[in-house]
Image (cartoon, rainbow, N blue to C red; front, side, top):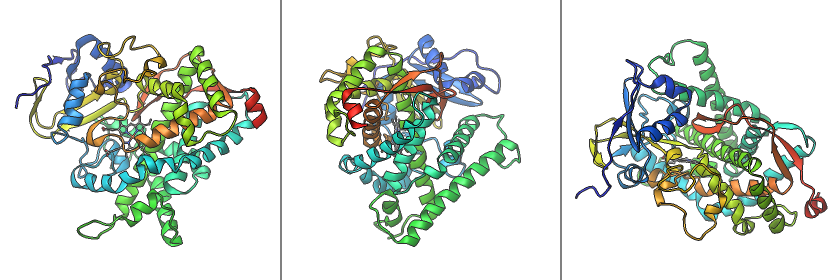
Length: 461
Ligand code: HEM
């Protein structure tokens, strides 16, 4: 059958160096560099990282082909026999696994992320949020790194909802270890100059030690749950009691470790960064912020948000969607060509790596009027404001984000919960994005938390 996707012209990005290709420029600011190349050269590009050729796709039709229409031809890039990049940290968890292992684990994990299950977690999310807000009360008016605060908050939400435990005591430590290992995963990816993990460099030692500490924490969590024999109906129970339909076997300890770490890692930094970018955009768009606060005040009347409030906060939802458009926290999605294939008139050799830039799709001028402007209003009509695959903050196809509903509910709930009490004011001049598996504000996001004095809030205080 002929390929219905329109044809694209492939352009080779100029300036590749011998051996390194475009690696040096790419490593400094990958997301922005891929955006610049796209503006300069078009929707389908070829470049080189080290000796490996990469294809960069920035058009919704190509994204649909890779992620949705032909997932069998475009595999995940990780090989469990030779772990690299993120797989060095997460092992063979849901994000990095492929084939039968992925299918089986997705079948086990998916039901806990069903919309109806998430609705039952909202009160727990709100409780965690209120507890942390109580801590904020003592520090009102002080400068704070909101990016870290959001990570602490979302890590605690994921710990309570998925593992029925608190990470409060380990939170700074765990965030640090996750940061060390994410940075290692990004820096080592496709870098022929990066020294292999077995060499005793200080960087390698630091990375191994971070992994060891996280393993201890996770195996401790597993041991405590097994010893207690308690059932919480949470993800940890689901994983511990999953049995293979055919063999009746459960998950091994290594598989459990990989899935737990995957959910801890993927389940907190993504939403935390989405929230940080939202606070940044609101702080830099005063009219939008006023409208956001007015809506929150009107709907909540000074009380803690509940699940049924979320459908009555359309402007807040629009703000969150627009923030995920401008700063998609998973800005680049990669695949490996599993079998020689042609899409959009382009022939792709086996093993070639494809990068779909979600960041570029979200700012594509053919699909978004005023693509670089923060315009929450574009989301307020009843119709989706763009072609289906021009907006993919959670990916698409069979490997789309399993935590989509969780993240959406959590993000909106925490925005309402914080926004009803605080006005967050930006306290730094320059804010730059940095790619470290997720897109985060580089060096943090300094803000002051100004308590909001509205009649309803002061009555509730
Ligand atoms: C705003 C928040 C979030 C964003 C923007 C986001 C984005 C994404 C994207 C784009 C993918 C697809 C990656 C690919 O195609 O290679 C993905 C996959 C995934 N996400 Fe999320 N995510 C978010 C929150 C979460 C949360 C809260 C969890 C868990 C609690 C989670 C767990 C996962 C997992 C396990 C996968 C791999 C799914 C699979 O391959 O079967 N994510 N996410």
